[in-house]
Length: 367
Image (cartoon, rainbow, N blue to C red):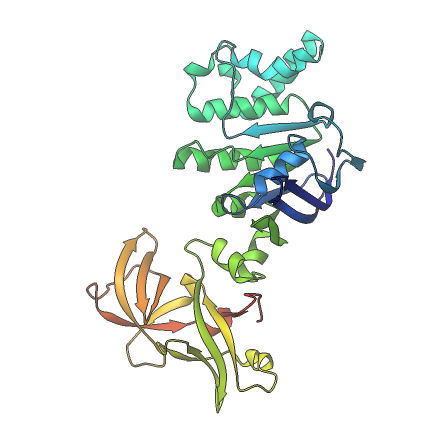
């Protein structure tokens, strides 16, 4: 396998007087044997970045290396990569065996070796009994396994996945996520995986690259991004339901306080946030708290937040509560319990140790 390095990589689409920068100066090193997930909303540049690694898009500026070799001008067929798309693109007139071995046959690999590689890949994926079927005789999950097998038989330096599970139903997506994670452990392969689904990113990646508007927002292990997001975008994109963010002011009035801008609540702030004031009387912030760090408390207690209960979503082991606090909508995740009728006010407590503080102007993490 091989490492992948992007140094100041840019992609600019020339539109005459209005050029569009799709990817801005990405610096990223993917280690040999690592599974890195590029995640972000539609149009963030993640697929364009993957296509530049594959050679399907040219690099406008910067340097792209695979296995230490600069590949900016190397054709896709000579990069020793294999790509799996969301559309499995199997040849309908070929059997599974023929689909999986087709790329090797084009390279004039001896028939005996093709057959051996196909059998090995089929064994890894548990599709030995499907080798003589045609794609129309397969389920969606089976077809996607065949697409994975077609990539495995090539023994590439790098596997590239472009939203490979987006066309599957929810149950199959979970199953195929496990298959890909198991495949990564078994092959110890370098993999770059693109998705818009942050659950896929959290459960698959050794590291996650969060992108927005063509820029990298944060790179790190899943739990690091969840617990210490660098900015408000990462905080709300990673996590389901997302982090609650409320415009507020950090003030010192005898004690350190967080006051919602609309006056909906006043909370005692963590003592460590005192250093953020630097002698100033107050500071505009975005106050953040994840849904699982809100708890129900009696109204009028030290909770400090009175919220209207708008919706209850039973999820089995927990409840998702949609709440209205002043002008703001909040989400809470709480254990199953008896709740008052919808439209009733309830009290909320905040686990202060897990609260987050972001700059109101730059949205960068402060706490």
